[in-house]
Structure formats: C-alpha cells, structure tokens
Image 1: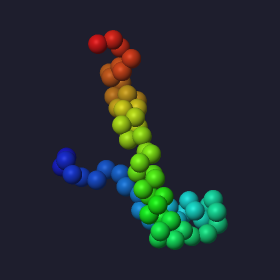
Image 2 (image 1 turned 30 degrees about the vertical axis):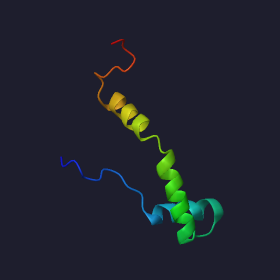
Image 3 (image 1 turned 90 degrees about the vertical axis):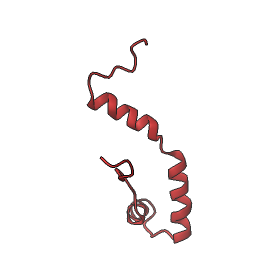
Image 4 (image 1 turned 180 degrees about the vertical axis):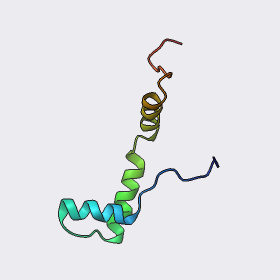
Amino acid sequence: MKKNKILYSLNAEDFQNVADELIERHLTDEEINKIADWVADNIPWHDLISDGIAEIISEVDFDAPE
C-alpha cells in the first residue's frame, strides 16, 4: 500500500449532518473550520490504531511484559 494513501477522512457534510442532528441547523464555514481544528487536535489517533491492532491481530499482546 502507498504510504500516502488516505485511509480515513471526514468532510464538511459529515460535520453538517451532526449539526443537523444536534442543533437542527447548518454550520457556517467558520464554525466548520473551528470544529474541524478541534476534532483534529482531540482525536486519539494512536490509541485508536493501537486498539484496532490489538483487536484485529490477536497475536499482539500489549499487556505482556517485554
């Protein structure tokens, strides 16, 4: 697989769909940008990938002593 292949992404429509559900209105472009920055800073990427590896690849035991 290419190193720069995008494996997961969010787009503006994803943010608008959540806003429609939660606050029943569309977000402004400025609001989307601010929220997108917040999301990017707060997603625990390493933890999520680590948990996925542990769950999908059963031979990985992160709790075993080294």
